Amino acid sequence: MRVWFNGSVLAEPGVPVIRVDDHGLTVGDGVFEAIKVVDGQPFALTRHLKRIAGSAVGLGLPEPDLDVIRGAVDAVLDSQSLPLGRLRITWTAGPAPLGSGRGGGPPSLVVVAAAMDAAAAATDAVRVPWVRNERSAVAGLKTTSYAENVVALAYARERGATEAVFANTVGNLCEGTGSNVGYVIDGEARTPTLASGCLAGVTRALAVEWCGIREIDEPVGILDEAEEVFLLSTTRDVQPVRRLDDLEFAVPGPVTRRLMDIWTEREAESTDPW
Picture (cartoon, rainbow, N blue to C red):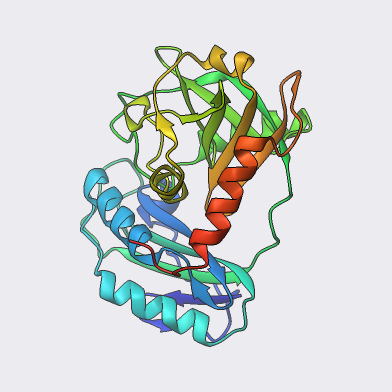
């Protein structure tokens, strides 16, 4: 693992660098991106940088210098071999009083690169009893305030699953803790619209463009009628769901298989599709 913090790569990655009063640490006042690395190259970096800038503006943080982030990404990747890895870019409000109010301190920027295991060929998911608030002040932003996801994912893992699926406050399907959710009805691949409150996933956006997935908001119960269910994320790409609650699916189904094949073909064409 290699770590870049506020201007340089750390000689010792395990050395503490974030101040105890950093607002990202004390109240989760920050944004981040997770980016897949293939053969030492970040995938879809431009799209991820555009999203972290938008998340920062949405959270009221200063917009990060994307050229600085690109330099930091190069620095952590140049110093190690990563056939398959994950980049994490974190941008926080920096030092602040020990409360919700910001202190106006200089923001903190951390870029980390580390090896990553390949996603499983298929996975299991469960629906959780909690909902996403599509009208939240941070709906659609990729913030570091992930406690809700931690609780939901723990609930899923207690039930033998690797992902938790949320509805939103009006009962429509929304998203997973770290993925967008897709499903197949009458042979048509569908996924919730961004109005559902889900994150504007980079993998989701590319899959919609490349594969013609239909964006539509439907009750979460539509999954009970689905012929196939799949997840979309940076670390999963297009991943078929084998079991959802008590529902079982043959994996990959024909539509999901087609999506996976298209993804593999298009991903190989460019490391930075934008």
